[in-house]
Picture 1 (cartoon, rainbow, N blue to C red):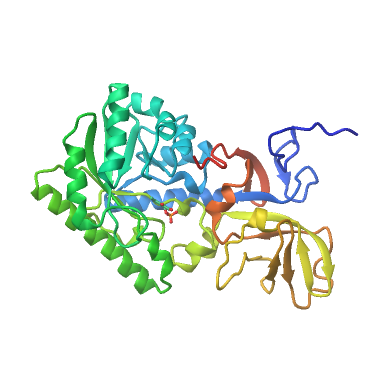
Picture 2 (cartoon, rainbow, N blue to C red):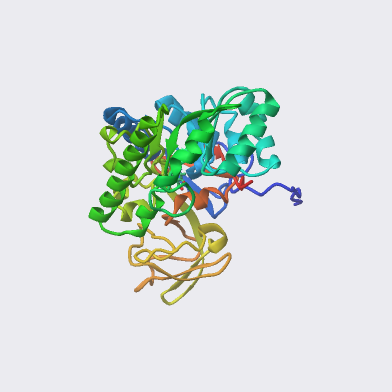
Length: 383
Ligand SMILES: Cc1ncc(COP(=O)(O)O)c(C=O)c1O
């Protein structure tokens, strides 16, 4: 038998395999990333209902799924646009029906902006700045295209990653608002530091501060005569604590579509709301040491204080003891007889978004059966 050599990454599901198909079918190689589509549908509907009820526009961050199929489901459910992390992700999402795509990252250099020519020309693009230097690059880009580009100013509400501190926002915003190729559309923030605290009360406190600081910045800008149309904030874990009365107009959660053990540990979901799992095969057993064919290159090295590198719902006593690149080593006390070499197990993710960046395609399941092949068009789009 000859196997054709291809330069694109191999995929677990045999070409031409007929669906639906059992997760134990040999046409499905492992490791294979599964997503439970009933849970995905429910997660999308729940967040959309929350946003609608609270009076927020919902602009999902697609870095969590990197898939046009998932973006289409979010837009059909009522999302008003999409958020991306990189210019090349925006290029991928240009093929979606999103009327507006926000690149939530300060873009430096012609090579990045070149990727956005089509979206800018179609007026489907919003950019983010936190400095006069970044804004200047956007202005040159807009003028070279003879178009007007919408810009949000990023506010640092405590994450200390990017963004102007509240006191410095007006200088950046006033400069954007002088126009000349740009349109000042409002402000945005990401309170990612909510992941650094562990109690629900502390997460609520970070989120409430995120909301009130954004409201204060909006008021200060409006006093200076600027119209702040968009006030964008809110992740999967902070959105539940934000209020339109703070002045927030839009939320940008990403992970909510899938959820993971991080969002579970931050009170944003319950175990039955976690959609992804890595289908893996047991390749070696020695007493209570059970080794899987998924290691750090698949499950990643993201570690959680409670769940280590992941959790096996069907083997709740299993704990990961070490990770090699292609081997995940578990300890399962009293494992004898309950699991054999060749068995397949499912591992829940600590952080679903990083899993999605490593797979060319994933598999949608319903009722535990594979029903859909899903392309990840945005895989490794970090430029
Ligand atoms: C700028 C920005 N907005 C929104 C999000 C969405 O966060 P989450 O996936 O926690 O909902 C992120 C996550 O990294 C982000 O960086």
